[in-house]
Image 1 (tube, one colour):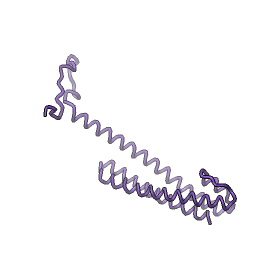
Image 2: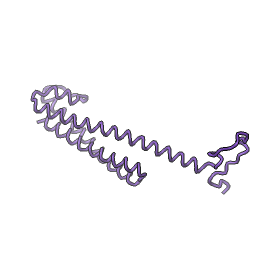
Image 3: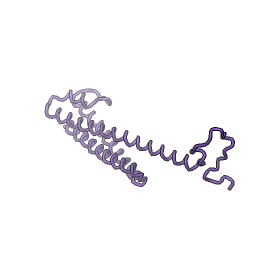
Image 4: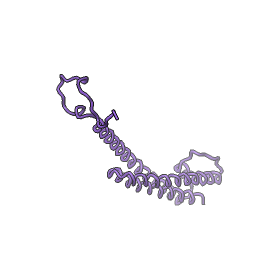
Length: 165
């Protein structure tokens, strides 16, 4: 019974992570389109999913502990699904558990790769924003060619804003 509950929790975790994967793809498109409102909504939705993952992780820990106690083992917070599978003698239950684990691991790897791509997009976006600010706040002389004899002290930086106001 505990194995079926554990498989159910692992399947629910996989479903939630798959939703995070879909959200990550939408976030990638929002980053490309520079759609800040969509990004905010996606992050808000992701926070809800992360809370659900936390609840499922607590459920997984309880089910795992129940299984260990039913088999006469002491509680172990760091036991893995692979180690639990070694304690199962029913081949069908073991196979179902390992399949659920494999699906979850694959989803997590996909999510990790997508998060790395999105992180790079955010870095590029920030670099572009910083560049734009530098261009707007500097004078034309700062980013255009000037004769090497012209020293920095001879050039007056006019800037975009009048600081005398």
